[in-house]
Length: 122
Image (cartoon, rainbow, N blue to C red; front, top):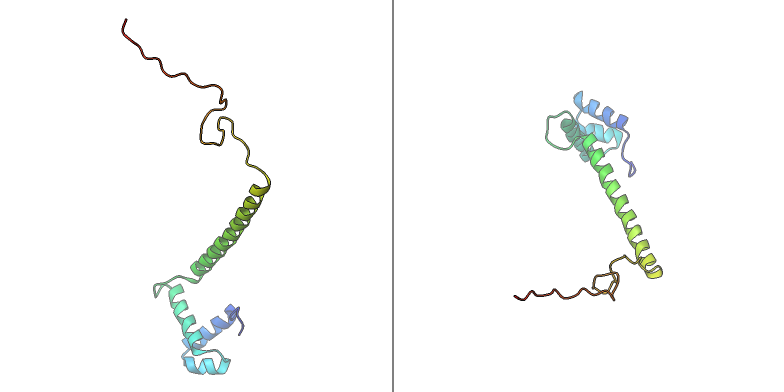
């Protein structure tokens, strides 16, 4: 079949045929499905029923959706970073009060703090 795989009804029908006693090779030949595909379905069925360790079908779907969401968010973040970089070249950053941007602090450079007075004994 195609990239999408087989419909769930076909999988159920194949699993039922194998469970009823038919050999995997016979079912594979009759339905033109590879034996490996049927063995994979049988293994996944055992996992879903809790007879074998592994990710269930619903857990796999959830994991796939989460990975897809991560890819989408990373693409969105890359777009925002690119836009921010382009805007930074066009629009200068906003000045922050109290910071001159040259590494020295103070909003008013002409206001210098006086050196602390030392107290000498009288």
